[in-house]
Image 1 (cartoon, one colour):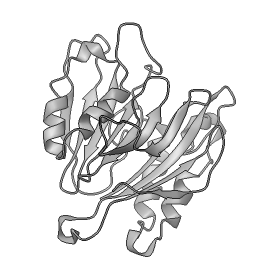
Image 2 (cartoon, rainbow, N blue to C red):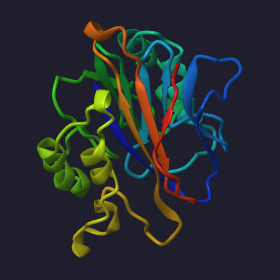
Image 3 (cartoon, rainbow, N blue to C red):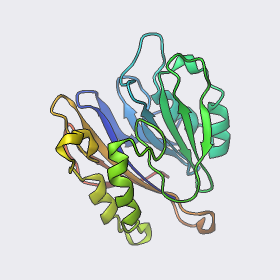
Image 4 (tube, rainbow, N blue to C red):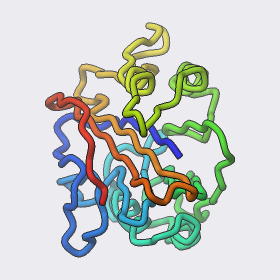
Length: 238
């Protein structure tokens, strides 16, 4: 399984690159949000990945509600994606602003959709089918989202990474692409900077070996963009 992700956030919101930042969770490697203590993307030593995205109109914290970054850590407390998805589907929806949560291992992948701002309805869980899928602040493969409409066909046409050969070039190039039609606005690009303090702040690539290749380890690559750019580097998840 291959995962590519860009993180869009306020540039001045402090964070730390992926690492083992939680002494009470030593098997988790993830980026750390310094402000709230959670994460946006991580992997555990069992080879399970979790990533959180804000839904439209829900950027930032809200009084009386918990940080959505906690959910990445809670998901990564599990060794199996199916177990994690079932557990987090039972969370109290009023405790969090709306989100998309992706949970995956080398067998299964799930999308948890919490789209009810009132907090009345529980999250829905959708098992992802084999093949390419993309998500941002709306629904899965939402063609009304300019970013997905522009880049889903480009990812489908690109040569997938070959972790065994260390070849990530085409997906790295797509994650770095800054092209967008003026009428769509800068956030239609895969990587953007609004000039108003909100931008793509980092990129990540993850490969989870199939069950037939138990001798291989997951690969977690990371590159910072804002507030200071750093080159791609491999994060050792185990």
